[in-house]
Image 1 (cartoon, helix red, strand yellow):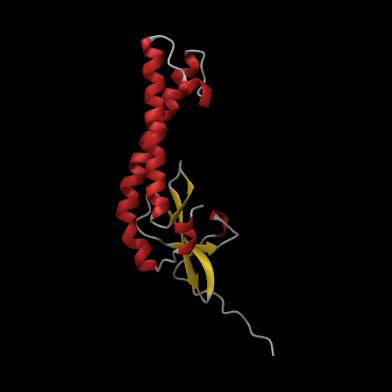
Image 2: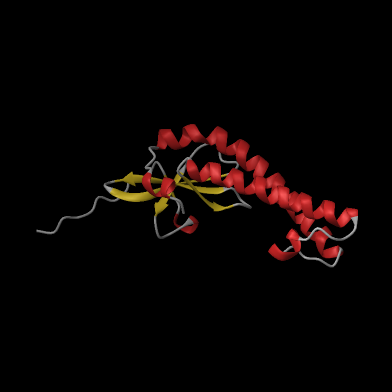
Length: 149
């Protein structure tokens, strides 16, 4: 996790304002992930599953070199997309589903506003430690901590 995502807190309105940009970025990310799987499969068919060492190699047939280059380019483009999201202060939790968390404050405590690719707006939140399974609708009022006397 970067410093950007640790330092920024979003309101629901600020998080929702980012959804159009995230929709576009995750559209590209999901397309790249599909292309990466295809390139990975092609490299395996050449008998050379991708690894840091194999991707640096310059030998082989023109098709193999081209496939290596495509794989490297896709990995770099994917890294740039994720980095741009992270630099905006949004935490990417799952690339395949487009799951993101926005650090926020709710009833005086830190929580995540939770959004997944395809959702029109941020409709859920969860505690920092609960993850996707602990999502609760934003409309629910959080419990107010009890002060013991």
